[in-house]
Image (cartoon, rainbow, N blue to C red):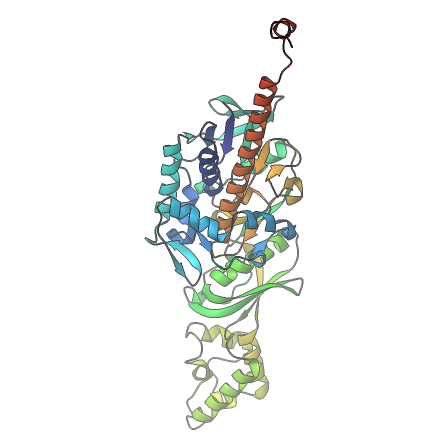
Length: 438
């Protein structure tokens, strides 16, 4: 019996195990995971609701040093395939503007249906069993954990990235990949909060407001996104921050200048904002006690107003009718393009995924097999691919898990066929040939 060892029982590892056993029930599948349950990281996805995938599937939503190599994987197992796979497991799903969730809004159910299917198929699941080394042998692989040593014909390395170590992704997969000859693109936190140097909005901590967030690297725009910005006591958070954070992380790693530009009113052009201020000034002109804050009341969150005025160089206690045109111009500029210097990210433990990983140049993206070590397959977050928020990182995990398991089963079936053919058509002994007039 052939043995397939899966190192890492996360999203991609679980799907790979199911695909392998459904394709060939006669294969032995052993899954190693260092946590007490498989798929523990799935529980935290989508704020506990698990955004499984997204109907709007495009390469534009994935990042890599080699983005052109991603497409073949997503074509082999895309959005429709993910829906069909989970429907076959009995999971009901729903769409929120193309974002796909389990109908019950429980990530735990997604993990459970995967875990239950693996048990039904007879997978050998070895929890709390971290793999410490993998060595290529003449016949396959020798895999060592803290308590045992086993041999396998094929290995799927799906140990995850470095984000959320408490859920099992501690970066050990990179060490194993390097030991098998692979190189790793620098790994940095992604989909993560950002820390701001000399942060001026600390008193506005807790505020949520719609804004456009743009990442500047050495003064050049790297990415931007619009959505709900969250102010924290150390910096900024929220979906638009997460979407651009991988560029900031990489820039900080490379010692580049990293800035975030916030547009607090993305729905208005700067000229329209100035016109709005002029109308409010006319409206308030009869009020001698009106102050600059009154100009912004009803436009911005009240906790943001004092800091916006301060950055603009306008005294909070000044009289509104004393504000000069140059100060109004500066006020519009600050609201539309407030620059923040980023000092750091909030680290791997608070990141949803990692950016960077095993270089795609070293993997056959049609089969997910290593180009360096035969019969080794890599997938999931371990690879140099990360997606934006919206189910894209899970889709990558599902797709790579499926592709590599299918390819392994295909190779094993060919191998078995050759073995049978060799047995059936081996040279016949001379005595047998004589007896049967050969």
